[in-house]
Length: 207
Image 1 (cartoon, rainbow, N blue to C red):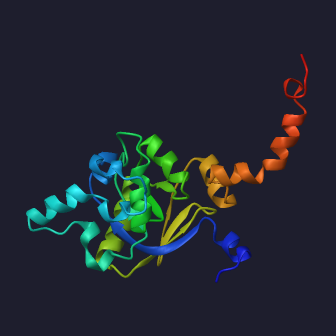
Image 2: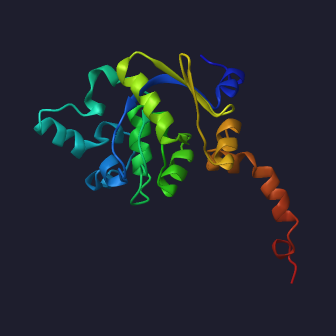
């Protein structure tokens, strides 16, 4: 078992194989079709990520990247421009996360989607199109290649290739400090909240 000190040192540092998904403006309805939003738990959403796109690919006799048996353990997703646009459904990042994705790297993201990703500890890292093309080429040429993502250094490495990524500083700090989970932060601040409440006149009989 990894102890807490080790976990702290691993925050903002990810190593894994990558899966690539091509196309601009892939919206949240494509990531997780609306019929799956009726479920009362996020637990099984991973198996339904890109359900319609995968079915359409099979009907054409093609293999969707998420059905590629050589990429089933991939934890880093490479995408293009405006990924996660459309509705604000939090099911979209949940579906990807429960499919095993830990980090998403792309040219740009839907703002609400990126925020929902941070809320579950899954960073959305921006990279310019040229650098992304180089990284994608490396990954697609050799499916066994590992990528190393370092939020502290804001880099993605693969062998001798080192490319710079960007993300909002507030989100980066949250992820590095392990404070992306708002519920946990709130619970840890319980005594401070109580102390503040006691100092407020309207909570202490003041009129």
